[in-house]
Image (cartoon, rainbow, N blue to C red):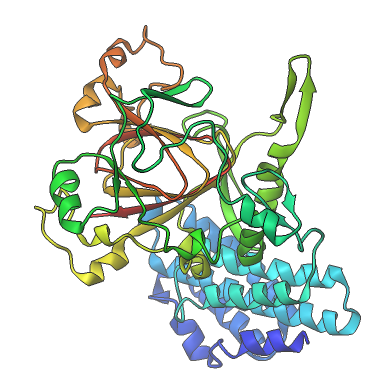
Length: 468
């Protein structure tokens, strides 16, 4: 019954106007007219005048949006982020109440779609606001998403999309047999690798430049030989216990099920240094439909068939998806190595609580996504959950050869690694590097300030762990 979802969301919302307005820190930063409008919005919500509440929410969201987007993000007063979250909460819950009353009356898919739009309201609060009432917006999104998953059967939902074969799977054996990625060449533990391993057209890994692979080293070994020396290393056999790698195996269908209705920021364009690069908000399902499943549309040419490339590349990049959707974070495990002090902390151990300060980001996209040559301010583990990526690393000592941008992008090189302009950037010829193809189930340690270029060789989902 639709009334069950109403009860579920309502039971988490404070029933006191004092408590609700109290989540807005230092409201004296706001004009009295805005505070009065907020109080009126709260009163209409508590009075169950949901349509009027929504009408009051919309102009308040516009006002708050302007405050959030004026000047640098770090300079925005926290009260405006709390305000955006509060308005999103009351608007979203009001939308749930209205949509579910319509569902009980007609049961139409159109009204159920209206309920799905409530999740976008909650997600916008999560993306633009700050946590209130124990991160209540995340709980709201989960409640509605779970209800929709249990009560809506969309076309194709009984099928499971395979990252590996590029088709829908119809039975358990097909799903099982497609779990390993097919590749022309693959590193095998304990076997001698050939001198050169061609992993993709125009990408060759020369073993003299290759990054060492080590099977699940001890904490002390990793600290001594790689962390302290700022030496990159690929760690194997350290992710097999992740639910995302076994009993809750990540597939497109699984991600739709867990996060299909959730709104996320998508980068549009080949890389963030391009002039035409932009960002767009869309649901995870819309992202999959527009940018991932399109890869299977073959286009015939006079040279044979190729993958359809008419659409621009979309990339869910460097997004804290796991804060937004904690259910997905349950599928991964923060590497124990993150408990070690980084190279910039005098090699000291961190406390157990410091693991909570690990920045976890999602990198999810089709074949061909690129992160241009750049470096990061923290130690980094890049864990490959799905697919493969080509990665090239330059040590911090190579910085004079890499031509960093000036200003706020000084951590990004001006050189196009794949098509370097040696006339404009002559010193780049002398820059030495290491490279690898990072396979599913492997994670790469990238030391702080180590320059790295990353390109996906297939549909790919990576998780990065930044730590000090």
